[in-house]
Image (cartoon, rainbow, N blue to C red; front, side, top):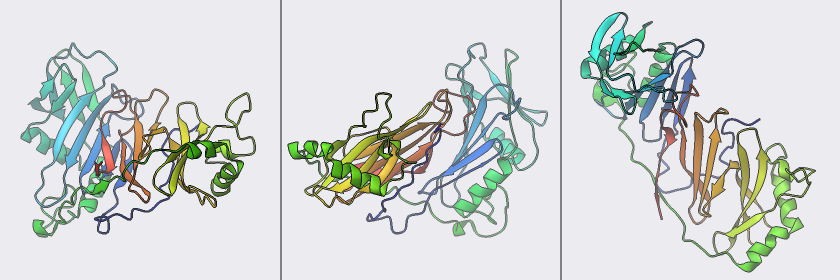
Length: 348
């Protein structure tokens, strides 16, 4: 059973502007998770406790990179149950009432006042009880377990440790020492090239299939293994061949099927032998020739996802986006938040 994104990027990011880029990071501890992207923006999400934590709820903290950047916070109540009876929502931390939140009852979401946010951030540095109460008597509790570790990781990634703006380890080091935010890299896609009849005919080539199998583990692509089939009838999975450029083709094949996910393999090959296939991924769900997409469920109900996209630059495929929707805690169908580790601007 495959549940999470597992395909590595096997082709380099040799693009103008990427030389000074940084890699995003993810980190999860107990009931909190962190995703920081290549612009130095970080997003931290906390949830109800995993075991007997009560009704689903999540808080998202977002902070851009660079000196003197504020923390933004938003909250989402569980979307699977009908919460329409709750018209007003109040915040209480460690038994102290912090008053009503700015609550959108129709959406089940809320934002924090400056006072509430300050109290929330202070509470996350130590053991605390964070409660939401509806005017109908409904209650939600956000776990504090893992929050301090996640916020420490956020400060470290953004270079804030020891500065007045740090969330966890404040100090007197000048705020101006915090590294600046980085621009969103631009990825220019290669020009589209029509597929030729001879390209389509190449899908039936045993030599091409053998070349793909030679560079791809059967563990990653079951359809290239000894059986060559994912179907009960035993028929080999069909190859699809599309043209990328004057001398390069894109070959795809259904590689595996799990309980909740499927994976297609994609390779860039020379348009004639020797094909010299270069693997892009074996966990994709589709393509538009110049772009390849992955989307993998994190749980059978599909309440969280991991997604990745690649773009063809005219010479290679590079990752153009990498993201998840947070922990699988049944807050919302598809996940509560978008938490990227890689963002780019893709230009046609």
